[in-house]
Amino acid sequence: MAGRTHANAWRQVGTVYGTEGIPPVRLAAVCDAYLPFAEAAAASYGYDRATTDWHDIVAADDIDIVSIVVANRLHREIAEALIAAGKHVLCEKPLSDTLADAAAMARAAEAADVITGIGFGYRRQPSIAEVARLAEDGALGRIVHFEGRYWCDYGADPTVPIAWRYRGPQGSGALGDLGSHITDLAEFICGPIRSVNGGTFATVITHRPPAVEGLSGGRGATTTAAATEPVENDDIAKFNIVFESGAIGSISVSRVAFGLPNGLAFDVFGTGGRASFDLLRSGEITLDDTHSPAGIRGPKRVLAGPDFPYFKDGSSMAFAGVGTTQIEQFTYQARAFLDQVIGLDEGLPPVPSFAHGYRALRIQDAVARSAAAGGAAVDIH
Image 1: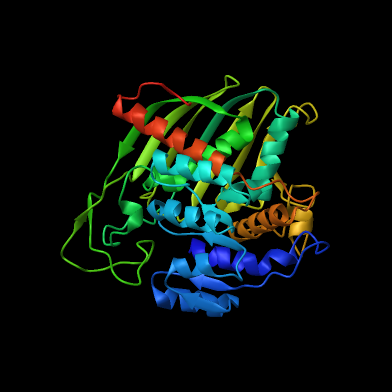
Image 2: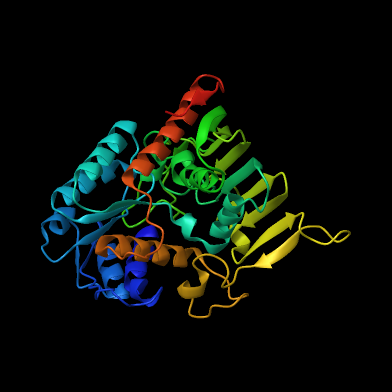
């Protein structure tokens, strides 16, 4: 899913935000442990070759940029090898599934003469970026409250087989998979998080059928096997947040939210307005503020259009009502990363660094420690 979307993004990277100063991008290779996946993606998106051994990518002289889109526990080994080989690395979130590995990856990135980034792609969603701009510009007044949720149903069916997402610590559960995104957006919009409290986890499907070759362990990948294996991490996570600004909020994530294929949404409240976003209506925001004439103030739907970030030069049909998709966010992210690699002076805002990914994992760790302490407050260090 995400791997194919990265493959598509690199194919589309030269179609947005102008071509001046952009070198030709050659699509060299796709690697996947399951060769049919690698071959299908390479053929679909126009890559030269497919392989099952990531060491081939490390050794390849004709590859400069690599997207890492594999199980979280594999990120460190692959990233460190690519960095040592002088390649620029865009790694999917979360950075790893342990703090120690994430810290090591951040250190390796800082010490190297290459560009590295972490895939918090929702920052590139035009409607979300517009809410962040409204908050930063003071259009909503002083931000006082954030409510965020990311509810999905990819794990709601107990016949979905075990996979890497259901193994390992919180870095791979609902908190790591979904919570990393919505927590990053909370900071993107409201500023740094100072502490968390009220951490709570639940695993409601405790066992799943064994892994099946060629099935990713996600929506629609069901099996009738009688044997089961234990699920090792959280299906649902909830916690409260306190921002450095003094604003407060809460976050709820679930991978077993029946009937919600991709339910990311949030509400931001300020002293002079509020803004809401729902990914199921990604081409708009709901806005209510003090600028409306007396007597007709109230929530209004604002369609994403050329005045929103990323929209004007990121769409071939750049007018309100066209909308945007999550897939386009990956293209915008890839272009931003390419801009960094080639040193384009007036490129897009940079992709968050490995250091940012390490911070994100520290927040997840604080949530886990809060839960282990019965919901106690834990500061972010």
